[in-house]
Every structure is written in structure tokens, then in C-alpha cells.
Image 1 (cartoon, rainbow, N blue to C red):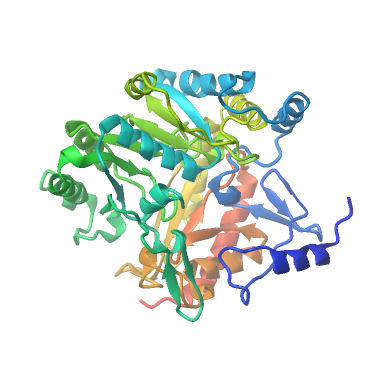
Image 2: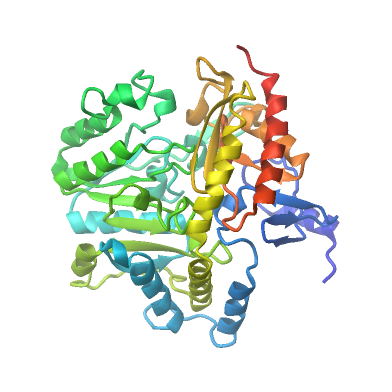
Length: 470
């Protein structure tokens, strides 16, 4: 089919409510097609997508087996709501609960949804129903979605139902976040809010400072009032990687007070960190786990909520009047099944671990070369580079850092400068926050593609070095 791209861009500009850019800033990005790890523009240029969409195309774009599964499902199904059974829904549930999570012993049942926001919203509802308690605790630098509950747990202000512009105007939805949601400190050891220079110094007193603060919060709220703590073990927006002591301590703390631990694996799930799920690196298990993105490599909208055996038994004593229209859509479930089977057959989590070691080595080579690189951290194929104006003082380029409201000239953000320069080399990287470069290629990435991307990042960081001060 021939496409008139001038007409497409005209319609987009006239009729579509865009995100991230105001009308005066809008820059169209026409995409002819996608393939593997690449975005292909109408002129035939191939951009290496080192963000895999929104850290979401885990198995790579347009996998032939997944495409074929979708076509086969379309030959038999249009729409069937989740009260009815299809082979795809049942198989998808079995693959997740038994084949992937069975050895961990905690998972009871799964329910499907259409997005990570929906999955987290549902997890919060389940936690409140199960405990009969009203309050939810999340942590700093989290992103759990944009709906009322999930958005109230999201602590990046600028990605949480706000509008802002270059003139400094900023507006939040009134009454948002909702009541009953509280934010605890994040274990961001690189810029410790308590002034410690290292995790070892923090833990010398026998406790993790930010975890102790969370315990104080629980005590102040009353443990009998706290339904759940929701957390990403790796903060998907700002790449804060939780120390093992914090994760294990959090699990002990929630168990002590009968609080549900909700593990948000929307970004980190399905092989991203080198295991099927991030919690598996830490020797703990959650009570509820949410997932999306990698569950279907974002080929169609899909998400899910896995609950423990105890919670599943509780829910099955009741009629649950709660049904999103598109939950367990048969065509989507066909794609989920084939995506998971493909990941199992090719052992993509193990591949992510192996390629992640190589990517980590290459990225860490950049730290001594560049004045603007403060820290390189990551796990599997999920990495971040902390961009700093002063390496010794760990001073960020943009002082609001992860608390930004997204106003002013965002093209001056360190992360956007790096993105612009890397695109000159045909590589797409970027970030959620002003000073943290986020890297997350498809789990099918090759060593050659890693080398190409790191060379582009190296080139881009050289341009940013000129903005540093010693």
C-alpha cells in the first residue's frame, strides 16, 4: 500500500492529541515499518532501537511465529469476553503459573488485563479486598501507571497526569494523587538522602536507613491500616536498582505486619533482567506480581496480575464483579502464548543475562572516559547511566532531577542532548528523567548491535562532556 506521508503528518498534526510535546514543539517521526531491533523510516533509514519501544519489545519486533499465531486466532475468533473459555487464555495462564513460576512455589492464579496501569490498579484493589485495609505505600522514583490508584503510586510528577510547557506553566489534576497513598524513600544509594557515601556505611548500624524510615511510616499509619507496599525492584523510570538488603528487609517487614507486597514487573519481567522476573535475583517472593509489556513483547495490548495461592483461594470464595471488556481477548492471548513459548524455546532470559554481561562491560568502559558519567548500573539488558555535571560531587546537570515537573526547555536536559547526538549515529536511546540515560535493547540483541550502540553513546557523551565542570 502506498502511503502519502505528507497527508499522514498533516492529519496527525490537525486531529491527534499528542503527548510529550506542545503544538509548537511537535516534531513528526514517521515510521514505515519495524523489524527486529530496528525502526525503519520512509526514506529507508534504519534506527537501532536501544530502548525496545518503551522497554517492552522483549522478543524483538514482528517475530514470525507470533504473527502467525495472531493470524490463526483471527481465523476462528473475533471477540469473546473472559467469562468464556478459549484455549489461548487457559494455556497462557498455565504457561505463566506452572511453567515459568511453578518452581518458585508461591503463584496461585493469574488474571489478564490490557495495560500495566490496569494490572497495577487491579493489584491494589485485590490487596485492599484481601486485607480489609485502606492505605497503600509506594516509594520514590516509581512509575506504576496513570490511572487513579496506579497513578497515585507513581512518584514521577511529570509523568503522572500533568501538563507543562516551555514557559514554565504546570498543572496537576486536582485531587490527584488520591487520599490513602503514601510515599517512602527509595534506596537510591548514589545520592543517598541521608548523606551516606556507600551502602556499607549506611548498613554499619545494622539497618538500611530508607527501610527504617518505611517502618516508621508503617508504625505512624498503624500497621493495621496498611494494605500493601507496591514497588519496582528496579525503578523503571529512573533506574534505581534496589540493594539486596533492602529487598530482603522489605519482604521481612511486610510479612511481619501482614502487609501485601506487590511486585511491579511491568518493565523488568519476562527476561529483561536476565531472569524471568526481577524478584528471582533476590531470593524473595511477592504476594502479588503485575506484568505487561514483555508478556507479549508489546505486539498487542496485554498485561496480567499473578496472585499467591492464599489470595487466589480467598478470591474464589466470592463472586468477583469486575470485568474489563478486553481482558483475555482471544487474539491477544494467542500472541501471549506464542511469545512466551518463543522465549522459553530460545531461553531468552538466559540470553539476556549473557548479553547483559557484555553490555555492562562495554558501558562501564565509558565511565573513566567521560566527565559526564557519574555511575553505570544495571542488570541483564536493563541499564542506566547517571549523567553529572560534576563527577566528584555527583552534581546533576538539571537540579530538579527526578523531581522535575517537566517545564522549561527540555531539549537542554542532559538525557535529551545525548539522545539527539546518538541519533546522528542511527541509534535511539533516551530517558524518563533529565539526568539518567535509560538503555534496554531487545533480548535478541546481537554483540554487533551492542557495539554499534555503545559507540554511538560514547560519541554522544563526548558532546555532553563539554558542559561539565570539575
